[in-house]
Amino acid sequence: MSTFDEKWVLCPICGAKTRLRLLQRTVLLHFPLFCPKCRKESIINAQNFQIEIIDQPDAKTQC
Ligand SMILES: [Zn+2]
Image 1 (cartoon, rainbow, N blue to C red):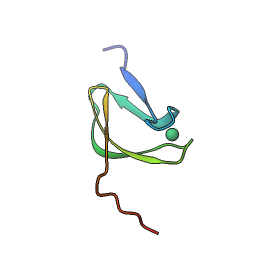
Image 2: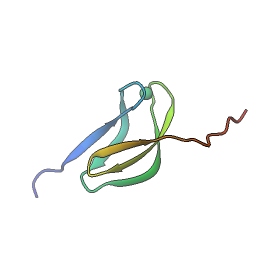
Image 3: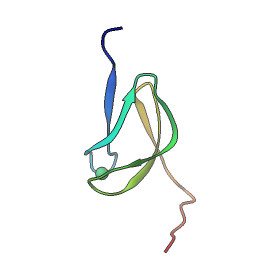
């Protein structure tokens, strides 16, 4: 075990690199991924470097 397998998560909206890294064993469920570039938040699942964007059908607009 000499190398860490890790991957930076890219913003699903603008494609910029976020500050979130994944290890191969990292598992995220409904994780709020914030992008510092476009300042938007996406809810994601991640497992084994596969990132899945979760649509928020019941997203409520809050003022
Ligand atoms: Zn972005």
